[in-house]
Length: 208
Image (cartoon, rainbow, N blue to C red):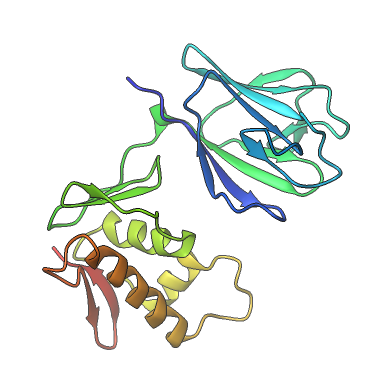
C-alpha cells in the first residue's frame, strides 16, 4: 500500500500551507524556508525536527532544537514513533496533527461522481481533481456533507464544523456564503447539478 500519511496544520502564525503529504523518506521542519515544513518564528530552530518514514513507521526526531519538540504535550527527547491522531507541538506556537494512512479511509462520496479523500484533503468530481484545492472551511463543509450524503445538516452543526474557533457565533449570511462558494467550486468541474441542496428551515444536504 502506498503510504499517504499527512501533517495537518492546526495552530500557529504565518503559515499558508494547511497540510503536507509525507511522501518522502524524510520531512524536515524548522524556521529556514528550505525546510519541507517552514515555520517562520525566531523561537523555532532553523532545522528543528524531522519526520522519517522508516518502512511505513513514521518517527518524529528532534534535531537538537532550542525549545524541543513535543508529542501529545510531552517532550520527545531524541525520537518517538508517531501514531494516528498524535499532536506535534513545535514550541512555542505551532501545533500539527499527524494522520496515518493506515488508520484513515476516504470519506464516503455523494452521487454524480463526487469523491472526498480525507487523507490527502482532495476532492474529485467526475474523475477530476479541483485545482486549486478548496479552502479549509470549504473542505470541512464538503467533508461533513459527504459523510452522510442525503442527510440534512443544520446551520449550527455546519458552523461548529467549519468555524471551530469562532467564539462570537457564525451568522446565517456567513454560512450561506460558504455554501455558495463551495457550490461554485464544484460546478467548475460539473455544472449539471448544484450538488448541495438547501432545505428551507432545516439546513443543507449533499445531492444524491
